[in-house]
Image (cartoon, rainbow over all chains, first blue to last red; front, side):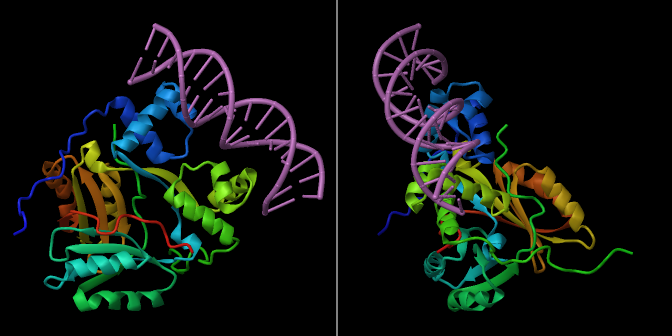
Length: 160
Length: 160
DNA sequence: AATGAAAGTCGTCGGTT
DNA sequence: AACCGACGACTTTCATT
């Protein structure tokens, strides 16, 4: 029988991260393309020193990547949709697999509640919605919302 | 009386964006810190040429920023929460304003449906949840979910 | 709109404190 | 853990196609 002991994979304390690291992270969250030299000037450190710190933050998994943020509408995806799903019994794994295979889906989470699964996707037209939803309806109950605007634009973690 | 004519602010066709731009965007969505020289090698263009294109994409609003992605748990925010809100009549504006003022909220959207407002936030402990929800409960009905995992990790737009 | 060359800046490495 | 100095790589500008 499988081991059912449940425990967190790791402790959640930020260890080995000091105030200087937080300042570096704050800068990189706002402008990921800033040079090490410029970053060094902003936090009063030499370029090699910041490069060292950034590398450590990457290796420690604190920085998970650097992404250019694009406007989906400017690229021909005027429709953004959020879908919540209440999976049928034992179908959650299958729903994850389908979500993985639909490229329009750009993020996807499991969470607490009746609708324990949700994802966001960008579409070229509303026409695309129905066939995608039909991939999921055999395995759960879907609730779909079209996203209008962002009253709060996406912003960085509050690292003081 | 206010002008009630409703029309989209702009057309949604990707104009003036060619296949080379899409390749550049695909690269930058995966690694925003790549150098222009390296980017040029990947798309078979000189460094000045890619730099020009990237600048035009920025000025056109196609690229909206460059963000370092960080792991909230590694920074002491082990709790990620998604909150949907069904606003009371005429209180939507107030809800937006409150969301704006809560730094733990990192994204926030309006959408169709009964719960026409939602946001995501990162917390240092579950203790933080109740006082934040209490900011909103006077103005709407909240539905809160704790986010567990990401069956599909955040990924770029499918630009072929 | 892209290229190639030139000047200034940056990234990186090794040695030092 | 950070600094300095040096070299190779990169960014940026400009003239040319």
